[in-house]
Length: 235
Image (cartoon, rainbow, N blue to C red; front, side, top):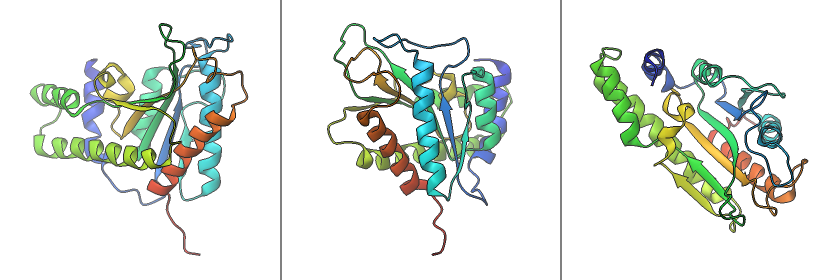
């Protein structure tokens, strides 16, 4: 992990636990973009295009609900670098960052469902220990409390999401591989790496526009975010 990244993570630990005076910030990160097309579906459509449509649909639902400050890391075909995405997330102090991607399972074309990656407590505490040893975070108790708060907020949202998802949709929450994704390890805010649909499954990955099953998953995420975060304005 880069030295400047370590500084960035823990320079903002306390800020990431602050309660926003305004509406909660939800950051939607459509993966890939620009020259990075990501995977290709069985029909030849790039992952970057599909996840952007998913992100845009989610943004529309959340913006229409009110009570939320909804932001995107990209809204067009261009693809910001990973460093830029992280800078946006950390500067926003988001209450939740959803990084949206799709998956492939070339060895099993029938694979379907939703995978949510999150960095484990162990992986993040190993990073925390290194930054303290290097002198980037002098207050171990404060930094540890901020980390625990972030983990708890991620878990709470996942529990809300479970109740909103279609009952027949397989859901896997994977903490083991979460440490592989910089967007999870380097963000100062609650962050989840979401993979849906499986581009290798002809029943899930269809050419844009989104099909009914994909819209149902987007709506489930929107319902969960609204229920969990939206500020209720007096009627």
